[in-house]
Length: 203
Image 1 (cartoon, rainbow, N blue to C red):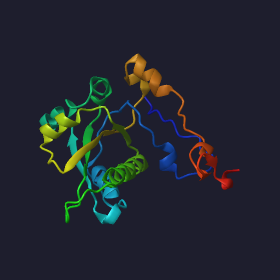
Image 2: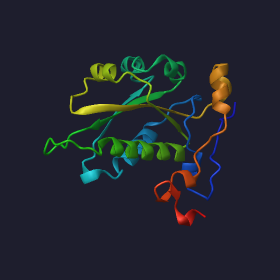
Image 3: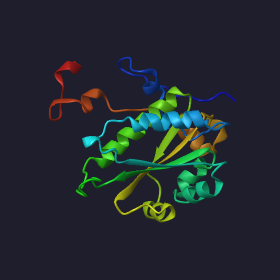
Image 4: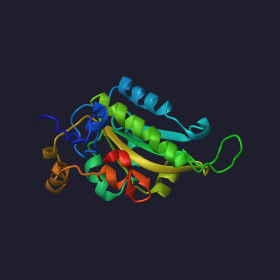
């Protein structure tokens, strides 16, 4: 069964991995290689960050090799996500250090920086023929207790990683959602010259 893709229909040409990146629920057979995983986290490691504080942390677990720990992290997901994440070969949690290591002062940009790192990871994954699905649907308090996350860190997202699959591998309701058209706001709705007024270069 061929993998299923939904490349974005972009207004202008963008880098191929950006257009091809999306968040599927269907995962095919085979797991990312060690080299792939190293590449994903190397991409995240070189993300820009405020003050170069690099507040991102990742707990990355493989379903086969790290079975017990994987299942404990999987149990932190909500039931809706567990339905499809059960087929993913890699599951990770992102966390943000909310204080600056050297001063202990709050780092208000930590979550932004973690988001940037996760985005770089997703683009690198797409370029390697992998798929990535970030999730907000998990119990952060349970994840903190399960993983022993220190107080100065906050769980941000969970991310499923694997090889692309096909909607037919999913329950019918999820398969239908998988096939739905991708939609985004138009540039005029998000890029302004004055607030709520489209930037002049868009026309």
